Amino acid sequence: MHDALKKEIATYEKRTPKSAAAHKRALERIPLGVASNYRHYEPYPLFVQDGKGSKIHDIDGHEYIDHNLCFGALMAGHCHPAVVKAVEQKLHEGTTFGMPHDMEWELADEICKRYPVEMVRFGSSGTEVTMHACRIARAATGRDKILKFEGAYHGLHDTALVSVKPKDPEYGDPDAPTSVPGGGGIPKASLANVVVAAFNNLPSVERRFRENPGQIAAIILEPILMNVGLCIPQPGFLKGLRDIATKNGALLIFDEVKTGAKLAWGGASEFFGVKPDMICLAKSIGGGMPLAAFGASRPVMDLIAQHKVFHGGTYNTNRAAMAAGLAMFREVLTRENYAHVDKLSKKLTEGYRAIVKKSGLQAYVASAGVNGALMLYPQEIRNYRDWTKIDIDLWRHYWFAMVNRGVLPQPYWWDEQWTISVQHTEADMDKHLAVFDEVAPALAAAQLERGALYVGAAGH
Image (cartoon, rainbow, N blue to C red; front, side, top):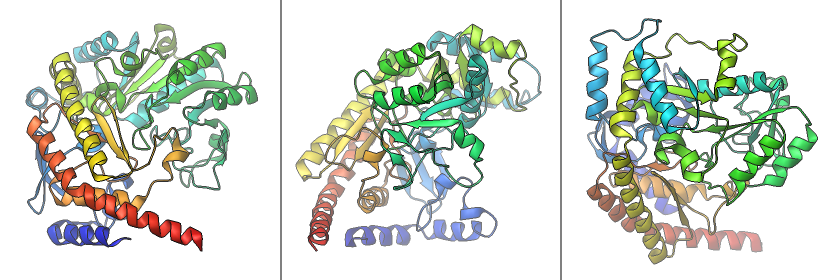
């Protein structure tokens, strides 16, 4: 750990004693002291007091411009008036009945108008809907295997939790990655039914179909690989996947849990001009409420109607969540708001690039829709294994330095990205850039020093 990072962590600890105490107390009853593993980091996570618009406050009273936004689930920002009003009304009318209501059809219709699907079913989380999408694909094709990409995250079910963050040397051939469990408890039988390919590598995908003739039900992917910062599909890659899936009788599933609301008005299909067979939506479509959806063509979704595939869920279409979803589609995720956030995204991205160039930092800035990330690499990464070469301590230096100055630049973890909400302002971008301008020279100096140390170590 280099000296500048040690200094920033010491400052963090000095600023946030109440978070430290809250975490220590939570450790007695909650594993890692947090409700999701992704929220834990050393020395301890920030504990939040409240949020409003583009800002949050921690329990020590510090304000932050928030680009974490619950791992990208809050493109609406905090307490968006339209969402609050819609949810508040439903809370007084009853939340969950386990019976149908008109908002189900209304929200399904909104989704079908915007994305290339004809029918929709709902859930409460991204994990749920990617699980159901994989199951329906298997039923539709009569095949067991799913193809996913190394480094991609699609939730926490057994099919998804494969080769999410594999480590060298366990991950094998770069063109035919080994299926590696994402932790204990993943059955070997599940691993056998998940084949892994390399992102931005069409020959790798074609090889998997040759090796498993007539066995692969679907290709599932995030159209932009978002578990490695931001890894953009190279020209022709998504179109190539569409062609491979069609040629082999497999379904193409776009996991748009992160991209569906945050990339463009019509999601990745509009942004990239490629039509999948199925889409999965969650996070930002709910405006902060637990809401998810999956959709496909009528023949595929009819498998549910024909009782060939079972789908259920006690909390599906909870009325408060559905009200939030309708408010999102009708009042928040509008073309006018997309124009607003696109302008902010351009300002932030161009500002970062100018500061990177001025400071001499060896890095680039990836950006798509309201998503972006400072990528601490000398050239663009194209897949998971490229991403594994990041200098983690340098990234931690960036994150703690930004947080200590009132900007939460992204969720903690170097595989995440920033989100810009519809409630962010030009002034927020100006402050964000001013803070990065202050931090970047120290990052560049630390990078140069660490580079020299690595060269020296290699020389011995």
